[in-house]
Image 1 (tube, one colour):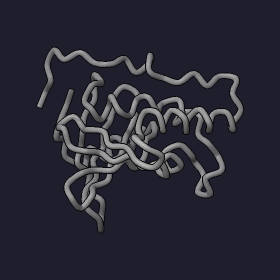
Image 2: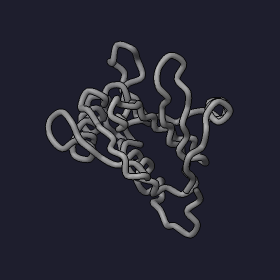
Image 3: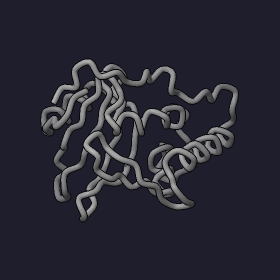
Length: 158
């Protein structure tokens, strides 16, 4: 479904300025932003998708979304800076954005929200009750994008 004429947010204005900060300061800034924007209490928050379906945000998912090493010791400056992009994207308020259902081999299909000019991806995983939970976010490659578009199905476009 196309949302003709709908106005949205400019992602360039929604980026966190982390210049001059140490990795520890970036992590603290990111955790604070995540807690204030996505959580309703110390461990969980509920937000909504473009089609008004609940998305659970868990405190512990900050590490998965913002660290780039398996041992969770290397913070990703770019992922933290783009935390403000997540909610407007999944809410359907970003121009040139789409939502895809992407097969996930042995598990239920995931939702992929993407913003095309910047190849910004937000992944949601299904919950048993039909709701979703935030998994991660990152800037992908054109190759990633083409792969997901080849195997997935677009269910919404801005």
